[in-house]
Image (cartoon, rainbow, N blue to C red; front, side, top):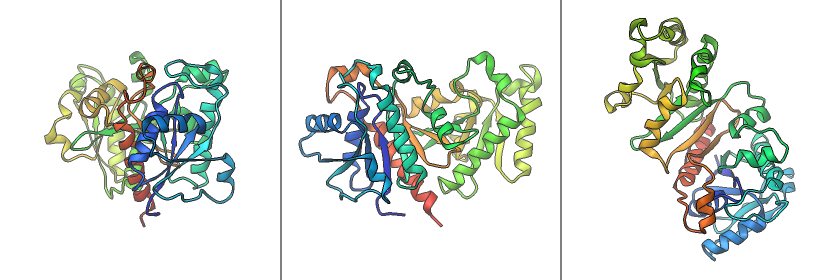
Length: 340
């Protein structure tokens, strides 16, 4: 592993806080990480000057990735892969004419990571509507990354807090009425296998310990409050245990998130979005990290949105703490993945 891992940072929605927090975090971590910003070079240069005239950016064309790698500019400059906007960005004001340029930043980062030009990708928040209004069907970062890398199933995990809490999700953005049908033996088994494999490969945990929640209150209470635990979740856990995975449960979600249980766990697998993430975000909001498991590349992201209102209010209103942690976690994962 290189002394400073090379991390592609896509700057997200140009009218939001993504460009500012990306610059601030990359500059703050420049001694530890070679962050490569991916976005409109002219916009980023202007914002960098407003943040601190000492910040130095060097614009490179996308062709820089075609010739064996990026120049090492040293810790006093940040490289920018230029993906020009169609129209000047106005803070707080969405413009669908820039949707294709936003999507290009993802394409550049993904291609670079797949070709091992980058050790990891970190994504600033984007506005899905901008890309859809530009005429490109787009449901989100995670789905786009899965499609572009040919990954049939990915797992969303958030991490943060002190001590560190990792929460993975068996289902993500579904109406609550659809969650039960989405939890099948095969899908849950694959999710556990992905979590186990990436905790080993990308986090360096030799035998990760995974705690699994039930779906229903009190984990079904022996079938009186639902049978998903009996019919699906427990059989999956038994099969995973037989395969050598250190997984246990299902546990009632309302009592699982306590130090006496979490101190013996490397990750909690929750059955749906609002079962696991409120606890995680309470413990770490503003410093949490979104991690996509199952990809052939490393990808992390911030735990918040584009914050158009803060962008409209001017430079200095946004907190870049989550972006700092997202880059740090991506670098740690890159080092772990490169370890023999």
